[in-house]
Length: 68
Image (cartoon, rainbow, N blue to C red; front, top):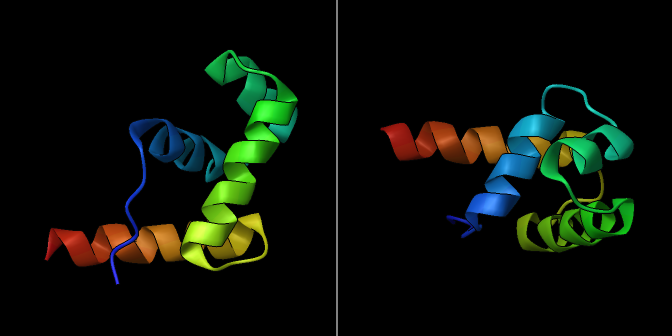
């Protein structure tokens, strides 16, 4: 199943994969930490995961599938 995400969500995941904290993500994306947490909660729901590691793995699996 392909999970549809926005460009902003994609940007957040790609920054998250580099190991950034919520505070660093908020600074880089010029939003509040609350906004980062909200976007992450939405992404966890969309990908049916419970943490950032699971999110990163599922996202990378999806990217890999889409390249085939």
